[in-house]
Image 1 (tube, rainbow, N blue to C red):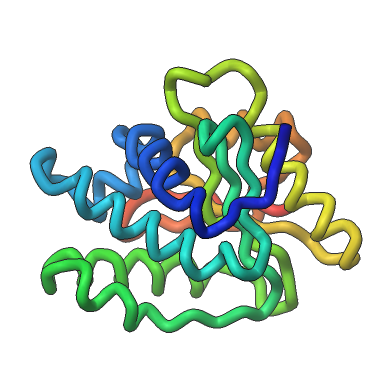
Image 2 (image 1 turned 90 degrees about the vertical axis):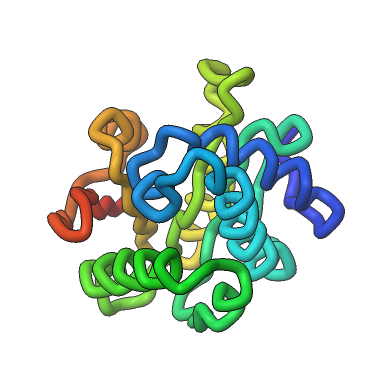
Length: 181
């Protein structure tokens, strides 16, 4: 059953996402060291969770096994809360990636799918599709497009099958596709 995440779901959601994104190109660009990846990825996903959970835009299934974190239109979040989480070299990569993505996003209002992940133990059950659609329903109800970015070529096809289309591409600091639905 799909639920809206609550603050007490944080640990389960973050733990599942750390494992789900272990080989993700963006997360490995941001946190390339195997030793520090679990700690930094947990801090990163924790910040993502914390800034969205009270907006009721984090949908999850089976105690965090699959999660979609959506950002409502025109919500700005400074990355000041990341400064205490990472050393300067990591912050530099996070900011470079963030700047590149934001420059490629549309200027009109949209719902933003910031994180969509499934713990590998639960892959293939279409749970990511299910939690993704909770946010798509909100975007549709608001009459707004939905936007996401992905750095995995296989994900481009996954999203295309769900009705998304590539609307922009980023080459630097790593290849990323911006998609719209």
